[in-house]
Length: 336
Ligand SMILES: NC(=O)c1ccc[n+]([C@@H]2O[C@H](COP(=O)([O-])OP(=O)(O)OC[C@H]3O[C@@H](n4cnc5c(N)ncnc54)[C@H](OP(=O)(O)O)[C@@H]3O)[C@@H](O)[C@H]2O)c1
Image (cartoon, rainbow, N blue to C red):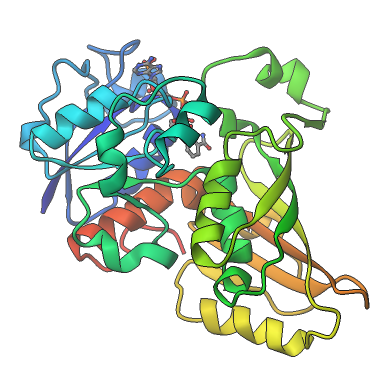
């Protein structure tokens, strides 16, 4: 049994995480924090009968924890991570603050100076399908972003085989929970409902360096053009990825590459050739479903990849990482 603390329990990822950890046979929840609901219970913040007490971060004691999860906005999480590590707890950070190995890249893409660059070198990027072996010893795990998980898993077999071209185009759509629980004009009901909007298109979105970092590390340097869209649904991501491969590449070879890579993976599924991913395949599961198919006879290929942004794209992946870190069965407490 391990003791687990959660910082930022009243956001969408924190709440999802609590639901998973409540079902985990090896976990005891020791604290859950919130600023706005401190002194109240989880049932005050969500439509749940779970009476988990909520306390401030200052009241939380990470020395009592084997691991803490940080479900805080990026830019606010670093002091909390530092304090938890100093207290002897292992950490899974769901924010973007430790995902980039290169401090200058973080400063540039997130537009502020990283205050703990010394921790970047010892962070494991928490994509178990790629870094499972390193998770057992990891003290700090950077849980991947939601869009990056769908895109990296969609392209990993090509990257690892050295087949990925130097430029990839990604058209991705996310449900509104991807933006978190705080209100902004764009995710206000009247703005998002019955609407469908692109945002931060081109080479602008802050998830791009993470995708490029990981796909480059898996193969060779890649540049990603990325067009995210806000989809008027609660949760779910669908990424449609365009790549150009050699004209004469055998489609069976490519399909076999994906099948061989993902057959052993409990949470990544290559769909049968006649099926395409959609969000209904993945909602409320920790699955990522993938399809890879030639688009024409000119070497153009389309890869489609779907996941639930709050599970495989966030809290489900975080629990998968925790299971790997502590030697629990990787699928424990996770909806397949
Ligand atoms: N939503 C997704 O699909 C998704 C997917 C992957 C990764 N992530 C990342 O995971 C993290 C959490 O995302 P989320 O969607 O759960 O966010 P969220 O719904 O906005 O929740 C944020 C949580 O942090 C607390 N918080 C807000 N501002 C804070 C501050 N300045 N200092 C300390 N605590 C603060 C909030 O509660 P109080 O205000 O009561 O303290 C809340 O508990 C973010 O870094 C996000 O980028 C999100």
